[in-house]
Length: 382
Image (cartoon, rainbow, N blue to C red):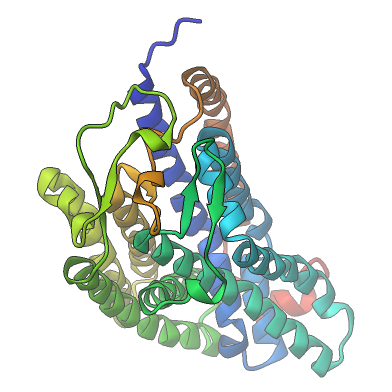
């Protein structure tokens, strides 16, 4: 088979696509998670909480597909990354999946009984389903930046030597709080667009202002920590981007501050952290100025910039090892074969536009504000 792109280009394309899928998940399912985390606080009455639930009810299942696509892309395009991360972070992933399971059950069962205590328990289950994944994803990103305690032996078998509690270091917890603030802000932006004008929407905006300031401040603190702390990895010598996928061929060393060197080598990359810093401020002033579209645009900018800045800072690293730097996984040494990446790209080029067009059509059809009157009168509402 004649492949029009060389191995280096295919690896770079799939590194980019993996980032696109993760950002797509944050931009779509992110506001579902944020809305669910806000729901017990935004809604003071049963009708207000049902409004929040029905603001995300029509789209959350489709949005969660981005998470599945991201996991599938890692499995197929970066098998080493999938093997190490999904086995090493097994308990953390189990927590995320357990929280995700609460969402469909909560949506379906909450209104089966009129008992306030019954509904309140499911409301808090939905809160867990939104808050826990937001926190764990951020903590996971923090650990990726710090380096994951795994090693590869001479046969490329992976061995994870960390513990669950070891994941919750100060820097990782900082990243977790940034993630929660970012997702809660996005949820507040969505509720600003979807809820009718009233107390529930006003409360969502109030929490959104707090989340915007927290996201801005702690993201800036995280950047300073990366610049001044003992965090970062660097390559010693050249790595062949066309070479075989054998992580042991690259030589990596622990290099504090190295995560910021890409910005001097490629100045255009600074756009990502700038978006991460300006997005929360745009959302904050959008709320203050009663510009609904600006609020959601700002929260989307924050999600895009914060996630992209992690990938761009680390490139070409995907999963560095904190106990054996030579086992670190890079874009150049941890991918599937050249042919596999090309076949997957063909499938993606055909199917992804269809998915995007259908998603846009579905949002257009189901767009509109949720009102208390509709919630009370429409039997199809949750």
